[in-house]
Image 1 (cartoon, helix red, strand yellow):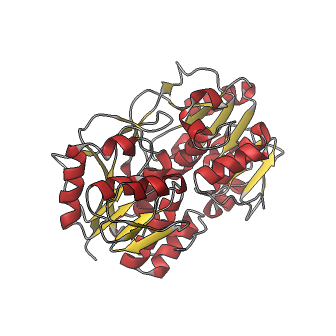
Image 2 (cartoon, rainbow over the protein chains, first blue to last red):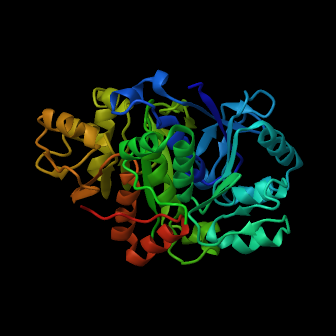
Length: 204
Length: 204
């Protein structure tokens, strides 16, 4: 299997677990079961990296400092796009540079996904029009109020409707596992969940 | 309530979710329920920061780049010490500078905790002697083989015996919530879990 590039968008005031959960899941997935394979890049189906507008250090919520691997101008091809949420999504969803980057990447990516209020960014970029999608429970009304043609699914852990969207924060881990399962099969997803001692929760 | 300082140790090849899970939990905890309080630092019972040997960028597993807030030489007082795991714990547990720092901090901290193979570091620092503790399932035997006087508890989500220790990776989120509950009460822990949409798992 050819490795897929997973690009995780970062911006100031991104929620830590929104990006760190999927980062953990994709970067620890191995096609070969067991513990030893986790040290082996050969058995890794994904190449995971973070991307931000510029290469400067991002201040996530709680003030965690993360240095993105790439800026918009030098990021490699992205096969799986992950747009996390957090307060910063309110800024991001009004940032024309971020919106047009997300549109451009989503056009060529095999999979596009959002965690938590990352759905607001996808909606503003016009990517959720005519689709069912979910977000953090505190943002259902806000997502609806954007009039972006989204059919907001309330109380879902995650929703798959062409685009993958998850509920708040920790739900992004379940969405990432759903992507792993759809791309690599159920056994690989379950093995990886066992490795990181995570009890998966299902779609609805 | 006076704010408690939560210091999370970082080192190269630390597991991302091992530190990001507890970082998320402690930094999003609020004493006032609801969504609005999450933006308010006044209602935050914890000040959360990362500490590493030097101030240089840490390369976590999967190559996430994190810039620690403090080095060993300039970190403020730590009330709650969190020692995460990952492959890097094998190096860390043999690093005299890290071991003596952990010993020194644990002496004055109100709470000392490990996530995953962070227990190996605490054990090597002599902090688990005579105590029950747990670690990642793949490291039970290794923890036992250190002959550090640890009574290894297998198949526990987390263990409290003076020091808090958790199972692998995602179990650190449950351990962090247990600390929040013991420090701030059950309601605050449950509210925060609801906010980050995490279904807590209990001690055994």
